[in-house]
Length: 289
Image (cartoon, rainbow, N blue to C red; front, side):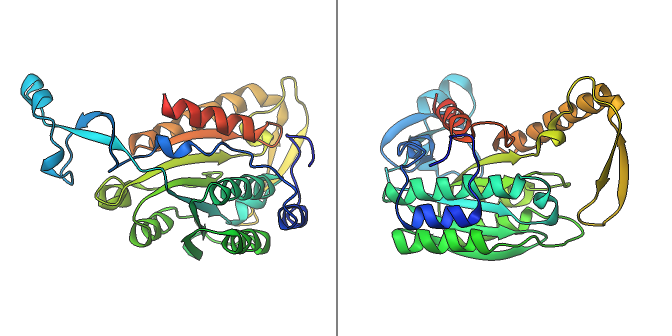
């Protein structure tokens, strides 16, 4: 394979995984971060309306005056779901190619670990849905769907329909959302409806950005034309204002992470220059501690 930081083209992804010339890039024990209905005790949390009364921890409740329930680690088998943004904005630079590399790596690791894996392609609505299944033929279906995916022009990218599909069709999962999140997203409804209800889903957001969308190099100069991939409107960015631009991007990233965090989604920002395998592994290991 290429260097860890290199991105494979979609054609290379097809060829390299078709001939099994790859090792699993991620460990097989991520399921231990998923809290479910298994038997190993995980911890306590405040009771929610959808919780079963049989899980109430009466000692903690009596001690604090607040209802607490016990959570347990799920059994070792799990479904991994990938929510994959294919709106036009993701086609900017190397973002969609990076999403493809990440998604295929995640799917491969799930399949070789004898776990189920599924895929939801979305833009302003669900474009395609592959329910979670096990086995090599199903992995190749996922790989082919990602390789064949083309950017979808839409007025506004919408995450909620994809989350609705997840809640309605998949009972439990470890889910990764792959998107640049450059849209006013709303995921509150389906989280209230099911993601943290009886059908549980542990959801992580991987915010995939081109490097210049995260920050500009210090001392940059000149004008950069930027075209909105959804509206085709062109504006010019004054690179000499890199300091103000970087501050605004830092603020936006903080606000995006905060909005996701308020509904229980941990997030990680990734750019093409970074070793995404190392960063995702560290991110997931941190989620377990």
